[in-house]
Amino acid sequence: MITKEIYSELCKLQDEKYKEMQIKIIPSAGADRIIGVRTPELRKLAKDYLKREDVQDFLDDLPHKYFDEDQLHAFILSGMKDYDKCMEKLEKFLPYVNNWATCDQMSPKVFKKHRSELLTHIKKWIKSKETYTVRFGIGMLMEHFLDEDFDIKYPEMVAKVRSEEYYINMMIAWYFATALAKQYDAIIPFIEEKKLDTWTHNKAIQKSVESYRITDEQKAYLKTLKIK
Image (cartoon, rainbow, N blue to C red; front, side):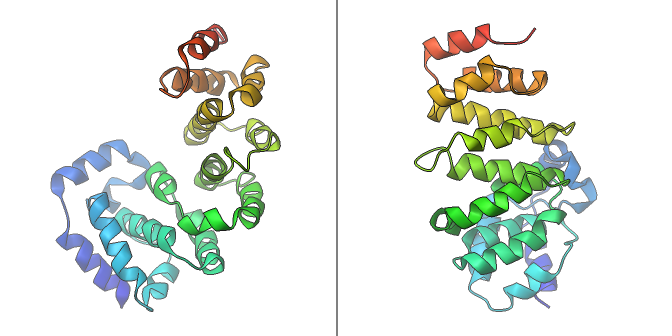
């Protein structure tokens, strides 16, 4: 089976030092699930397996046993060119995503050509009870709907999300920091009117102040809006 073949390939690429680092920075992945394969190697493998018909068997073999298999799965999805097939496999995979790395590194390129269809899924994802499904949905709004397709209703959707989950609130803060950099005039009222919870509000300001895309004048003003 292709899954056994993939496991064998991943073991050959294991980097023990990298594994120890990943265990520390991605605790939710589970220390016993991490093989320790570096991202460039995983991306190379994904390109190779995308060319094979039996890669579908690997994508359907859920849940995967190892974090590195999840990572490879994410990179394979990111490279798929058939939107419908990609979305079908993504919807099956999302419930099994249990860490920020797999969530954030999964970004199908084909979505750029199918934004209207993607938006329907995003609206569903951000209402999910699954932490990383919500995070992924907000991440896709940040990636695809802050430029020419921007609409004020999108940050309004994100501002309504309320969660006790750190990784969701961090993504909300990241979204608003990025939105301030790209759509400052439209987004600043969300901060001025305190439409986010206190922690996320302050974190969004912190990330904005750290950004090189925010002007010094804007940074000075944002600092005055922190909730003490």
